[in-house]
Image (cartoon, rainbow, N blue to C red):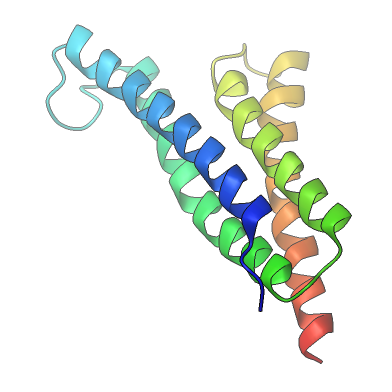
Length: 132
């Protein structure tokens, strides 16, 4: 097994995105004097869910991709999955604040989650094929 250096680099980038989302939530809580929950504020709720959605998907995706890289998968596959994950996770919160049913919402929020789900599916299938 090799050290998954490419995955580690992108994990660092994604950690910075996560910190940015955390600051975004904290800023909304402080400015809205919301100490717990969303305070009934839809904008705070959207920020909280953007942050939570990130934390729900990114760890598993990084584990799957890291296992692929450590197991010797092609660098192009690993890099492509990581770039798609990063782009998807940046697009998603942008789309959360787009107008309902707008092209921006479809492209950013929808595109972000579709990219993330595609990364999970491709990485999972690639791992299953390697193990089989």
